[in-house]
Image 1 (cartoon, rainbow, N blue to C red):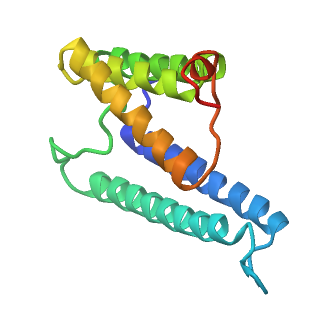
Image 2 (image 1 turned 135 degrees about the vertical axis):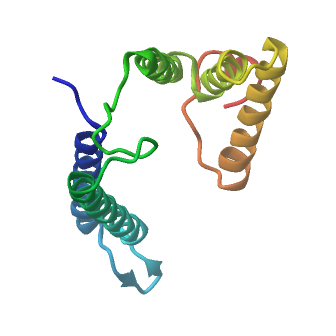
Amino acid sequence: MTVKRYHAEIGTALVTGGLGVAAILGAAQLGVGWSDHGPQAGYFPFWVAIVLIAGSLWNLARAVLAHRQAARTPADPLDDPEDPFLPAANLRRIAVFFGAMTAFVLGTLVMGIYVAATAYIGWSAWKQGGFRLWVGLGLGAAFAVTLYAIFEMIFQIPLLKGPIEPLLGIY
């Protein structure tokens, strides 16, 4: 069975819409209104979920309309919803992307987010972006420093750290 682009678009819209519903349910537990001190904890996630659901409905409607139009008229060779969703040539690229993301998540758990982000951005820039390895690692290090400045210094939100950060005096 070949998964067509139409099926993938429908599935994606349903999954993202379901995530939006889950976010609304979670936000409702935190409170989605305003208190005397400002917005409650679930206020912003609630509205982000509304936008997510609206986008999902939009994509669902577009997919259905394109599928119906394709059934009535000759297919556009550049934009046919009946085309296969995942040709074998693209499967490797997607597997590499998910493999790298899995390594990033595991690296974050083991080494902390700064080291994992440096490695992930560096690897992605090197392998997928065509940069030299040292340039990619420099971009990754710049990203990690920016991440540290934004979250730890400005917002004072500590992120997950590993065994290297204490050696650098970062707690």
